[in-house]
View 1: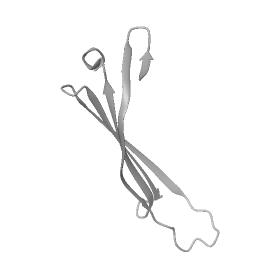
View 2 (view 1 turned 180 degrees about the vertical axis):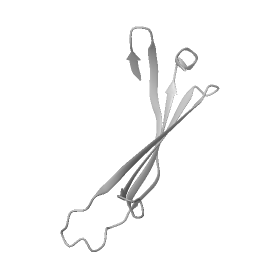
View 3 (view 1 turned 45 degrees about the vertical axis):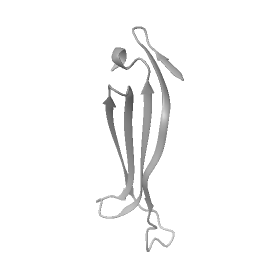
View 4 (view 1 turned 30 degrees about the vertical axis):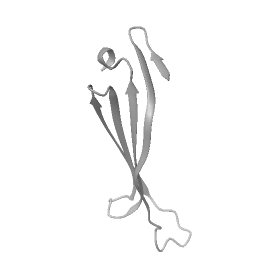
Length: 90
């Protein structure tokens, strides 16, 4: 169990689950040792369920070319955290 504290609030939490929801890896073609530019996009979605006292977080990371027409790689991971004092902190 992890306790996070600041001056006004203590959060008691533990990780219940971590799940790989999806991943992909695509090798860029015709590079011939050349450098290439890319863009990293990170999306984080968080939802809570008060009845189960849990917080769900889904993180998606995508690596694409500059104009986002080619996807080089991506990963999506879900984490579930149990918040023991959910009513007090959420």
